[in-house]
Image (cartoon, rainbow, N blue to C red; front, top):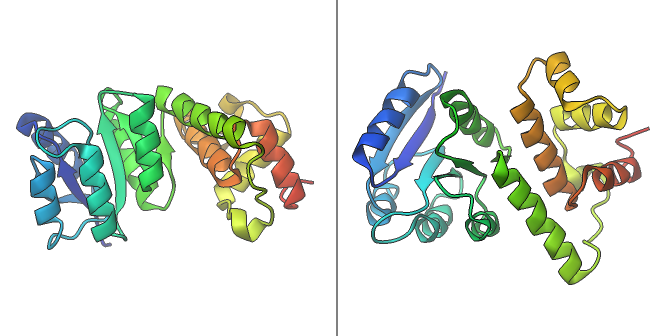
Length: 221
């Protein structure tokens, strides 16, 4: 089995070392490289393979956000996951706009951190906790500023995953997050992440609007 190649970018050596040990202890992933600054990351990623790039926001020299813009352009197949102490709305918005796949906070648990890596590697978006609220507010503000969001119709355009379709159907049936998590054998945090993915794909700010669009796309009966 090919392991997920993870590249770490953080200017604290002790912190990087701890992440490296955590990742390398997992059977399906390994650290392919690391950098202590944005400049080092840009240079190293020109020749070191990476499936997922873990990027700190605040670093000396080039910031994580500016570095992220460069590495996304140069490494189009890699997924960018920001890892920060701060849930600053401007940071989250910038991360979204540049095409980052996730944004999680440094006080998250090891289990959630590893799940986030696997999730973004699998093509999903992963935002948790207060960051989720920030993302939803961003899209709500965009709708207020520009009027109704452009219609997203047709299952092909929306491309909800099978799990996302399963979850939105259960939400439509009135099943709570807790009961969905128990039924599917996944965490409530994971349910929250799937709900956010659904909102993003439908370009809406509430799950009620998402269900309306899902009905229009014949995903709900």
